[in-house]
Length: 217
Image (cartoon, rainbow, N blue to C red; front, side, top):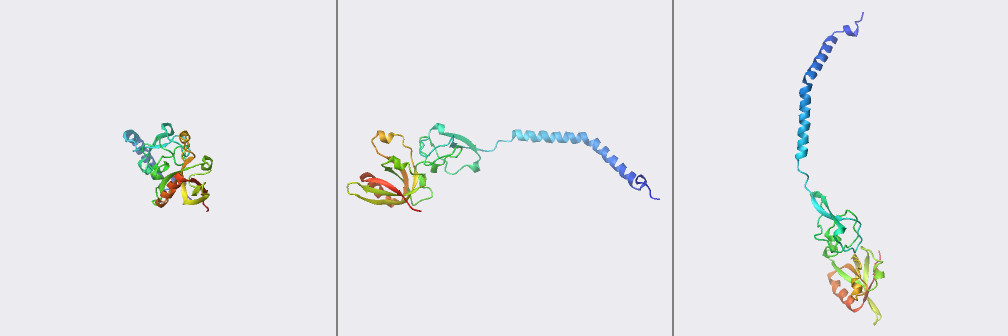
């Protein structure tokens, strides 16, 4: 006749081993609890005393800014960036400078965003050149990044010629009224031209009326 589970060999020994293990855990629970508390306290002290991560203050747009904005102190705030996330070529002392293109709130301000030599960064074949177009309404049709041909028209002679071909529009400085007050017509546009085109463009701006056409393609 089969024996019951309680009568099988090994069951008393198993029960005894379980009880022994339970007693061992109970005897050591206080030292274990103390050890865990000590580890938690040490971790908290380390977190409290560890130095904060290194940061660098970066000028960013305090709000959305339009192309041609002359920056003042309220247009920018400084935000802490980790060193590895800081953009290259941050703008130094940007207040008073003109934005070449729009800047969204929170975007870092780099030199290439300002009207100046940095506008042709990555294009050693071009130089940034301002040219005054006589009709502000025409300038209002342009956007930064457009590619245009600059045309010099002589009203008296009745002829015209292209003085710079396929030039990129780099910046559209805002019309602050200073030009009109001084009697200067039109509005400035900053374009990227080759060094060989600068002379003809400068002469045309003085002697003729400079206008533009959009390039194809």
